[in-house]
Image 1 (cartoon, one colour):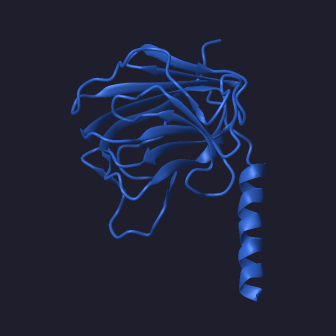
Image 2 (cartoon, helix red, strand yellow):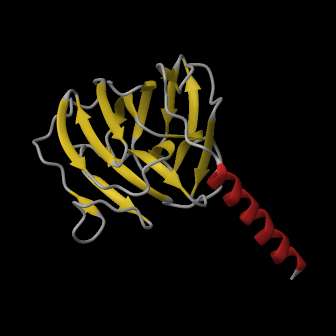
Length: 209
């Protein structure tokens, strides 16, 4: 009983600390991935599988895809343009998570910007996340045709978080936009959900004035 109480107190303290954190609005370009290690990131996985889901090799951030989980920033952010340059080494499912809040789980309250092969641009709203365009279920489908490059080629995936509006662009083509989003701030993350991929850049930039 004492152990359970202690665990509950610790969990509450973690939640309180994350809730109290003030989101950062970038004033200049921020390189979230330094090309050397996972400084500034936190990992979470469904199971404690042997091996490392995320690693840095030859200047690239690599994900083996299993078990399911994510790599998220330590800091919370608001009002930014995020750019992820990535490629599949083996096609599968992944994604960009924005406005991550609450306890660590699969998946926390957040907006998933779908990165799955041949489905990039869809949006999913997890554990209480909402948008005006979300009329049923958890999915807001993309509005345009597939803009993804073939497996093995580099893609530029951008997410613009402007107050409560989230916009997705794949290789310069706008594919989705959701308005009235809640939450509208939070940690930024990358999914491990089956795909083997490499990432060479993760940046945040200020929004245009």
